[in-house]
Length: 88
Image (cartoon, rainbow, N blue to C red; front, side, top):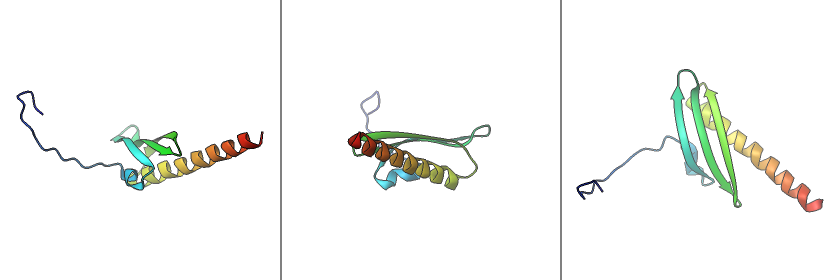
């Protein structure tokens, strides 16, 4: 609603391609000439929140691939830690 009480329809396109994967729920994409392609990603898996930050990607494709691979690595580390705690 506007200050005058008028309603407007808004539509925007999400540039974070990973939010369609179910586990990820967003945050921020961006680009600057000094930092390159950047992505801050948030995801939730089995009630565990993960945050991934990618800086300096040379292409849009590598930005998302790097973020996805970092999430997979972090998930594996977390799962290994969970299993280690069970056996301790």
